[in-house]
Length: 59
Image: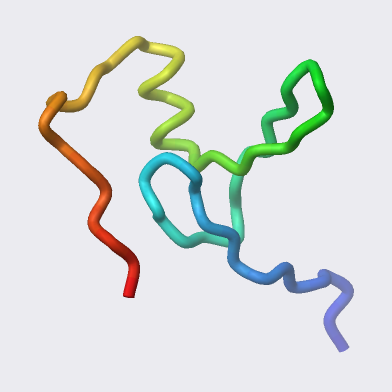
């Protein structure tokens, strides 16, 4: 018997990475956003991705 509840995988709103371990960021109006650790690191370190880069369409 497992004591840890398994959470469904979440999708990062910035890079579409799917993982069960996401950071939940709340805005001032109470909206929650799920962001992966890699995107959070890029934001904190102000690392920019190439401006021509776009998320591929999810199928």
